[in-house]
Image (tube, rainbow, N blue to C red; front, side, top):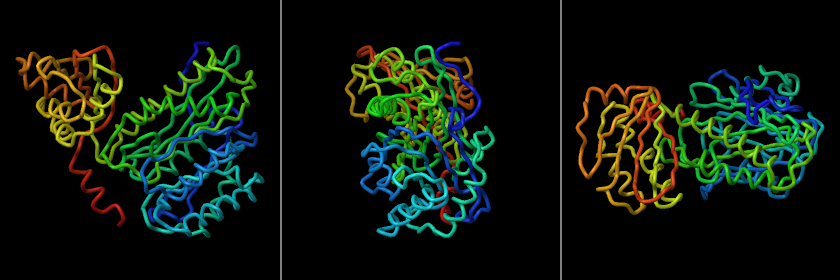
Length: 410
């Protein structure tokens, strides 16, 4: 087989992982609102978390577990209530939830990771959590359907569940990596992402798992933005149980490189799913910066464009307003000569230059509108200041974004 093969499924694609999703009544909408991902075999775990000073209770709980380095068996997630800005009671909910999972699933309390997403400031009712833990244990399965149920249970304003899975080779051994994520609004991560949970049956040392995750997140989840608002709950967790039985990856060799490639692919795919499903969005908006002076400049420039409200509004209106793109590049903080920049738009196999040599190009507005009317639109900015490149992903800014967030709590 090839080094990397895309496969169906999500968090149960890796050997030894089971999942479930159920409805508990935490949410008002009468839909699934709790999920669990579980491995009987102890896992090494790695994570990245929100850099927002205001951190939700589950973030602080998970950071402690990941940093202490003990074995992990489960992650349990609720949607509807974020358990953020909830004081001591919020941490007590995490403690009681972990105890309940430990009892029902027969694992150590310190082996339970927790995720929450939803409204800030509300307290999670423990009676519903206890009911949910019991139901999740009853429904636990290694099937694709169970992975789908779990992915469905963690979403809030997302329009669909988000899953990715791949197989890859670690030496002569076939390994698997799968994941699920959620996020549609309050998306502007930094060293983290909204909620994303990845599972792998690869055997790898914890330090290398954490190193790989921190490296990969920089050019995947950290290169997306929906609205410029960084969440209090952003959490990205990877659990690896070693069930593939490969020789443990304990150094940065070819096996490690193959794992990093698989992790990059999964994280990149999920990042694009999140960006394309931004609240009210009608299009995935990608910006590719080429020939920047430094890698950091390339990242900064690309993210500045996809974060620009005016540019996002122009994408929604299918308006080839290249001035907004150039403006966003200009205030990014990177230094360049605007007279040297070339700007292009591309979609569905068609590409058009809008700006070059310091002025507008001779292009058809009608043809430009057709390009900008596709489900995925790419802006390409050639800076002509170096050789570095970066890509960022966002979405258009629509009327529905305001509508969704104007009545989010009601």
